[in-house]
Amino acid sequence: MPEARANNACALILVISNIANEAAARLVEDFPPGAASLITASAFNQSFKGGFNVNDFAASHIKIDGAAVPITDITGVVTTICSFIPPEFYYIQPADRKYVCAEMNAFFTYFLSQLNCKKINRSSVRSFSGPNLNKIEWIKIASGANIPVWPVSIANSIETSKNAVDRAKVKIHTCSVIGDDLIGKTPPGPLQNYMFDLQRIFDVCFLTCHFVSNRKGEYFLAEMITRPDIIPAANREAIVNYFS
Image 1 (cartoon, rainbow, N blue to C red):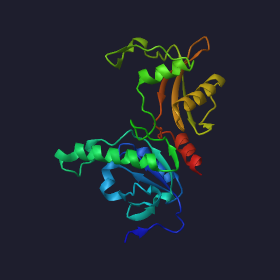
Image 2 (image 1 turned 90 degrees about the vertical axis):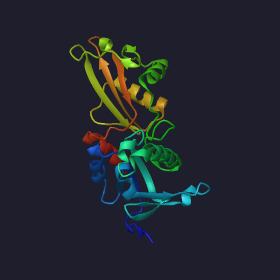
Image 3 (image 1 turned 135 degrees about the vertical axis):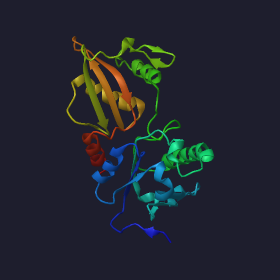
Image 4 (image 1 turned 180 degrees about the vertical axis):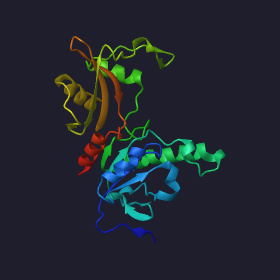
């Protein structure tokens, strides 16, 4: 029988990332002891086991780090990656890694979509975390919502330097939002409105955007990231507070 979780551990936050993101382990440590667990493909064979009843998903159990966890004990998910990649499954025979990776990505897409808990961000068919739109896609949507976008030049799907942001002539503003709250220093009024509009349009809990402002005081959206950036300590603190 798998070891049951401690009686005082009645909830669990899953942090799904990879070993290249050192901030993922720090985020787990930022939560109270035993409140969060890190899931990576590189340690998947040791840390995660699961078998689900598709007809009664809520009654299923998984095994994390040797402890049995009812699905209903999972109260939150933070996902910092779009998907697993084959090299992470180093413990699988090289010839089988692509297949195993594809199967695990499909499995986790289902798993994350079925969990009934807070998620940063909700999974989509493209990504474990958020819509994962390319730049052309989100520019079209943001422009259609009357949010000014910094001019961009793209050739053969690659952004050229012709219209890249010249940091000597403009000011860069980085803004992040989680739930109903902006993270860190309060940005200028127009950017607050843009952030919450973008969050609503793209239906994400966590969003980071880079804006530029010119000498006329005009603001333009230059970059949008829907996967949670957990490297800044302020972002990790905001995530922990969101689940508290």
